[in-house]
Length: 343
Image 1 (tube, rainbow, N blue to C red):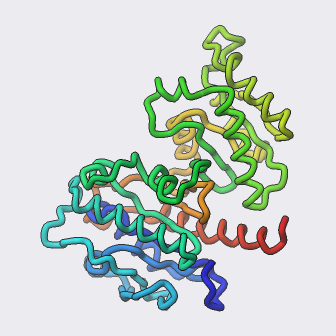
Image 2 (spheres, one colour; image 1 turned 90 degrees about the vertical axis):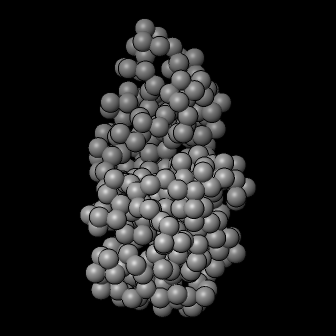
Image 3 (spheres, rainbow, N blue to C red; image 1 turned 90 degrees about the horizontal axis):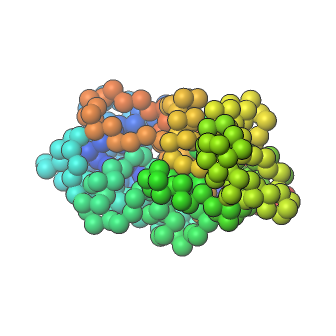
């Protein structure tokens, strides 16, 4: 935890792929005074890219280089940047997959992780990177989540979506639907529900109410539309209940997310990528925030891609980036409060 006398959580904001909308949405987010009341945002990335983008957008901010997190101003009107000096603006092509851009994005995440592990920042909020560019740069990870888990040695990391009071966890994510179905097992259901409960308790929710989405239409209709519910999901839920968790399911996926949004449950376990993504983004596309749980620090992300089709045009919405920084600060504050009270 950073110690400066300033209680606002210090959030490292990674620049993302410089050929995408990351720099733009970060600057738009930080041009508003709202985030500075609850956080100290520090951009980790390339100073020149951020300064050039601010000028192109004609934003009323000063982009300033800081040598270390503790030396930032963290005041509205100044965007503090820990400069990695890793983007060649003369060769950068907006909206195009490039290894150099992927490398710059990956290096920003690596530096932010190092800062968080060293206690120099409290949380990380990531702008979008491009998986193809990341792979072209030699990184083996499918995305941010896997990179964070490996570099921090976190074996129980999960993705949680936060959309207002709705929380969605994912049993599987970046695998094919066919592979996801094979990963829906009794043991994985049981173990993931246990991790979910611990994460939510760390965030201040005592005895969280959990629900599991069904895999098949109508939860399988007693085996007539698939038997995964009978063979794997129901036994996994029963195991979790036997361990003392407050959990119900499987509940048909066309109802469970709505019920959770109404307040019936504190969180839902989605069984595969699109099942939970569609529910979240139909609820509120721009305010959906991705949280990687199980890390030694809070990590959030704008939940959309690099938007290469509009990169450099100045028309990208910063709402999800604003929410990512806000949620990072709020979750960090909750963690601090729980540590202070021990409850």
